[in-house]
Amino acid sequence: MHKLTDIRILLVDDDTFILKILTKMLNNQGIMSVDSSDNGLDALAKIDHAETCPDLILLDLNMPNMDGIEFVRHLVEREYPGSLVLVSGEDERMLKTAEKLVHAHQIPMLGYLHKPVSPDKLAEIIKKWTPPEKKLRQQSEKKIYNEQTLQSAISNRELVNFYQPKVAVATGKVIGVETLVRWHHPTDGLIMPDQFISIAEKHGLINDLTCLVLEQALAQARVWHENGIVLRVAINVSMDNLTSLNFQDLVVNLAVENGLSPQNIVLEVTESQLMGADTRVPLEILTRLRLKRFHLSIDDFGTGHSSMAQLRDIPFDELKIDQGFVHRAWADETLRAMYDASLSMAKQLGMEVVAEGVADEEDWKFLRQTGCDFAQGNFISKPLQAADFAQWMEEWNKRVQSGLIADLA
Ligand code: C2E
Ligand code: CA
Ligand code: CA
Image (cartoon, rainbow, N blue to C red; front, top):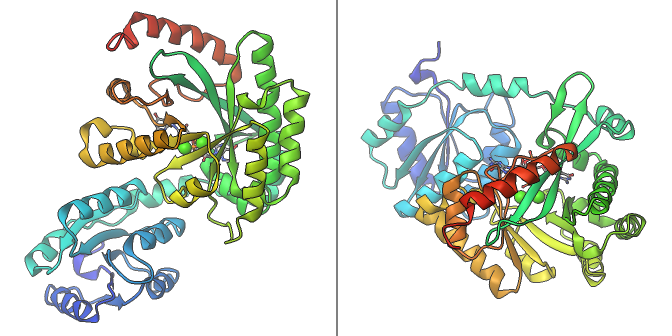
C-alpha cells in the first residue's frame, strides 16, 4: 500500500527560495522524498528516469524559458502517469484556465495553490492524492503498434475512412464531411487514429497514409456526386505531408481523375510537433493549392498546434474552432470568450467558421445565436461509414424539419 508519506514529490519553480520553503513544509508534514528543479528541462530529465520519476509534481506556471503550460505539453507527450498541482502567483482566472488545459490533457490534477503557499492549504491538497491505478490500467489496454505493422496495414489497405457530416448552422443543410481514418485491424478491431497517426508521422509513413485516405475519400466523393449529393470533402493534412512538392501533384491529379471541383476539396491543416523551423516548402505548397481554388482550413484553432502565426502566413478559407472551446461554451465565461474571439477574428479575415465538438442540443442552440457558419459534432452525427451516410442524411433532414432550426426561423 502507498502511504501518503511515501509519495515522491518533485517541485518545479525557478525561484529557489520557494523551492526551499516548500521542501521544508513538506518535510514538516512527514513527506521526506522531495526533489526540486529550478527549470523545466531539468525536471523533464528527472521524469524520464524511473528512479527519479515523481508521483506528484508541484508546478510553477510562470517560469522563464519553459513556462508551466509548455511543461504540461511535454508531460503529455511522455504520458506522465502521476498527478499535478499548479502553483502560481497569478489570479484565480488564470489558474482556472490553466487547470482546464491540464484536464483537457487528461493529467490528474489535484488542484492549484496560490503563492504564498500556506502549510494548511498544502496539506489539504496533498491529502487528495491517490495512486494512479486506473490510469495505468487504461494505458496498458491501449496497444502500441510498431511502424512495420502500420506499414503493412497501409500496403494491405486496412485503413478505412469514416465521414463526419458538417452542416450549415442557419439552415441545417448538409454541406460536407470530414474524413477521419480508422484502422480495421484483422484481430484487434477498429483502431482510432490517436493510436497510429503519430507513429506514421514519426516513422515517415504519413505520406503513404494520407495518400490512401485521400484516394479513398475522393473516390467516395465521386460516388456521392454521381448520386446527386454534392459535398465538400475535407481531409486532414499533417504539416509533414507538406515537405515535398509531390503532394500538390497528388491532390491535383486525384481531383481531376474523379471529376471533382477543387472548391469541394478541403485540406484541414494542423501544425506537426515534429516540424522544423523551415516552413517555406509547406507555405509554398499551400499557397499554390489555394491558387488552384482548393479550400484550406486551419484545424483545432486555439490549441497549441494551431497558431496566429499560421493565420498570418497562410491564406486559409476556413477556421475550425477546437471542440475544447465549443462544447459547453454557453455555460462557461472563459470558453465563451475564446469562442467569441476566434469567431470574430475569422470573420474579420473573411473566413468561414466551423465549430467542432457540437455534442448536445445546448451546444447547437448556442451556435445558432452566434453567427457561426457550420457545425460538426456528435449531436449532428458521429463519424459514419460511407454506406450509412444516405440514411443518416434522411433522418437529419427530418430532425431539421421537426424544429431544430425553429428557434430563429
Ligand atoms: P480532428 O481533426 O480534430 O477530428 C475531430 C475528432 O473529434 C474526431 O476524432 C471526431 O470523432 C471527434 N469528435 C467529433 N465530434 C465530437 C463530439 O461531439 N465530441 C467529442 N468528444 N469528439 C468528437 P477521431 O476520429 O478520433 O480523430 C482524432 C484525430 O486524428 C483528428 O482530430 C485528426 O487530427 C487525426 N486524424 C484523423 N484522420 C486523419 C488522417 O487521415 N490524417 C491525419 N494526418 N490525421 C488524422
Ligand atoms: Ca480535422
Ligand atoms: Ca479538429
